[in-house]
Amino acid sequence: MNISKFLEIIKSKLVIIAIVILSTSCNNTDQMNNKKNRNIIDKSQKSQEKELIKVKIRCNNKLIKEYINKGWQIEKKAERNVTCTWKSITANSSCDIEKDKGCKLTVPDKIGKEYIYTLSR
Image (cartoon, rainbow, N blue to C red; front, side, top):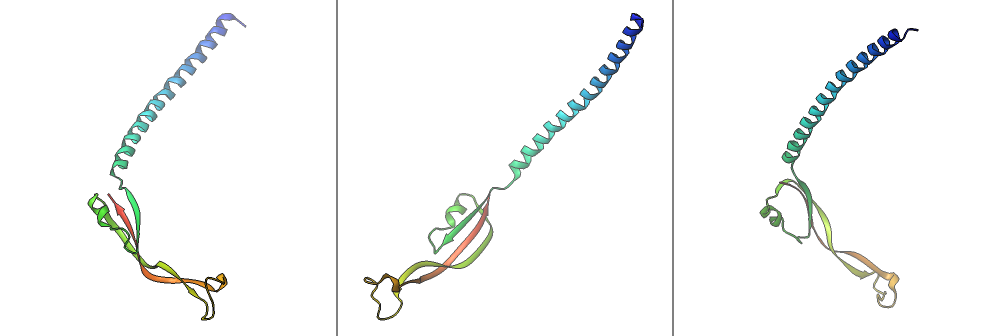
């Protein structure tokens, strides 16, 4: 094989490789620009997202006004009955709680409300 013919083949292949590399690099820069634009959009969407928390208030232990004064707004409110305090009673009249622990029963003493708030700001 002739050296000049060999060099021509190599030159033609190098030209093809150069064209392929240049054409794919344009797509990469476009993709990088798209990623940058997406990141900017993601950051702006995050700043528009609401901050949400759930607060449970049982038996009037806390006040929701504390959160409202800090800028929180009530999105949702749910309530349910809960036991606030418990008491011990004897299983029957002949039991002595001090001597026989087996006849001690624990029962609800005071029933109250539990409020579950979903707050946002």
